[in-house]
Image 1 (cartoon, helix red, strand yellow):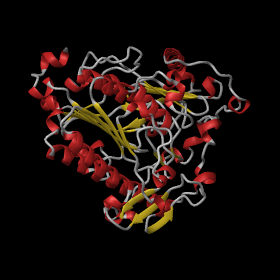
Image 2 (image 1 turned 90 degrees about the vertical axis):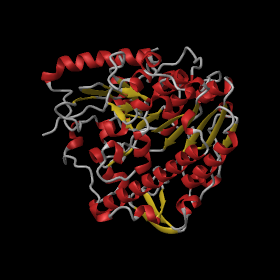
Image 3 (image 1 turned 180 degrees about the horizontal axis):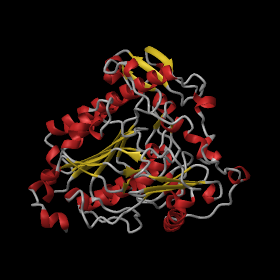
Length: 478
């Protein structure tokens, strides 16, 4: 109603609007349009100028399978019971009506290209499979088969202690964009756009970069001077005051072995992968324009979760610091042109996407959805009608966190294995845990109550803490 009152509705809005949903993998907010000093993402910056940036958007679980299940179900992980990368959303909830399924049930073509639900990367890209996909979500689903770390080129493992499949292998690949996974995904997406352009569609395109292995053609590595890469600035004793259960999880010294020099190579490879992915997004957006579909297509870009690149002396995901929970998020709505180029810092969550898209398309949505339509913020980035004041994210080891405008409160072992409290106004980097500071006792009590209320409302069922979790008490910094 707000949009209808304030924004004149174009003829495009009178039709069924299409949806193009673009999602990257393991991408934090390292985008030039989100203020990153080094990473170059001109195409996503262009999309932001055609839409609204959500600069305080948070995932519900910083791991691929659980986050994607939350996005596609419109439910928090405690409710959809997908609490990691094992299993599938449909196995947990046989009768779930997914985001794309709602569009499909209302006369839309629903198509998938590459990774939308969880996949084992790189193995399923090499095999060309998607074992945890949800067939009821799609009319057509296209898998990508690409060489990944086996591509010809210069290969380096920038985390030499990690010999497993998720190490920081970078590949300065020979060949062109379309010889590798995301270029292939863009090719198939462009073909699908041309094929379905005469019917309403919901098209989801998954780009697997910058998920490891960090594979990109050489020209994208050449965008970055390896020696000029700037690592995150972190206090040496940053982890001394966090609970042992997470302090000791995947320590660099034991898991990765990233040195100050290899860190530069790791960052160059990550940013090169981001720029490669960005270029493929640009190709799909260009095709949308060339087919005449842009004026009636809502475009969404996001990532499944954030990613640590040495922040807090940590790497990758499953932590509950800002860099792990926060994601880039852009929505371009063609009939809201005079709102384009703006951004909002209001707290929002990926679980809000499902009700937003059904709202914009005028479709009935399941009454079980737990998110809130972002439409008020698309009309007014500081809308007084936006009442969400916290983001709720959970993780491994009974980790639970709420993020408000001023605070982050996190507990582990479902509250039995230690807590973290960060004063974001004084300590935006989340370096000093105030959980045991008596000056913050009243704040801690208030936030603990808020977190407990939130988790109960999202389907939490108490599980007893393990012996290891109960030992996770933290010690203050010296």
